[in-house]
Length: 461
Ligand SMILES: Cc1ncc(COP(=O)(O)O)c(C=O)c1O
Image (cartoon, rainbow, N blue to C red; front, side):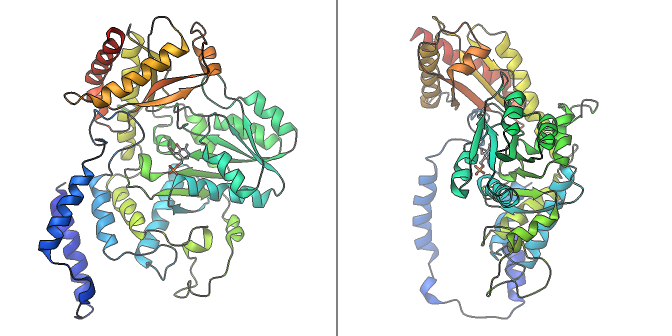
């Protein structure tokens, strides 16, 4: 699609709508000439060049990529109105779009009933889920794996509840025996299972977590902020071209109490778009509050009445709605994008497996590949130093840059996966690449060759 054309169509459409309200003079206090704008805009765009090329396949670092052009067109067009999805009085059209996209997300997870809304981020979405956890089990804590996102420990602090860390197993998933023992103690009211951990992309066995939790009368919240859209690949082995995932953890999400997914990660959206969904709509009563200055245009449920946030960009809902109309959250829609990302990670891990210069830290489950240079001697200090040198070397090579990220792997993690590596320091940085652009798939061979060259350069230099 021609973004320039559709952006100007968006401007025209909103101008036509504005014209239907009759003319008025804009205030001269905000008037800026094109000439003046041009000079400052040139400075602005120049400053924006100080960025990493998230759009390019040579950027194989963190979870970062530009939104889909449809999301850009949707966001900017709606932003010209600037609706606030706090309430139907703030933006009826985008509030309704939000309800529709949230229903699509609920269907993606197989939720029969749901209450949910978009949020500004995965952090806020998880905060809301843990807030409900506290309200439903007052005085009891929240358990999460040591590999869970740091937000869970922080938000337990914010909410004034106990956060209990559970050990990870050798694949970076929550240790079920440790969880069972913790829940037997009776202090925990809610367990967080992560469907796609931030560091390794590991999938907690949600179905097994759920069975243990229910035995102890404990709720389950699923943090699928990063991994949620991979639900589209669950059980899809039989479908040509899709990288099927074991369906059991993903199907179990439908039976859990709440789930968070970030459209601003794998849903092709600009930042400012997370989502939280609860299976039991009755939790809405726990958000109950009064607002003397909003909620006046209808008796219909306003989104602000079921969330902790007040103002929220209606444009975020508009962008997601437009994107989902074009690439719906179905296996044949957005699923094809996710499949390409996961296949890129699987293809690359096969190349690393046969490399004498690189080693896999563990096999990828989604689209995150974690690996390290095969140093001599094989020690944590050697791996840590070499990984840091490769990160810097790739980024600062002006002729042929490549952008990676690092992950701090603990000593115990290495001992489980690579017991022959000498533990001469506490943990080591390893390299981590999130292949979240579908274009990564056709770039895997070039990326691998480039990173092998980096590994050679640091071992000889
Ligand atoms: C599993 C998981 N949970 C929560 C978050 C936090 O989400 P956000 O950065 O949108 O606040 C992330 C971010 O990467 C994540 O991967």
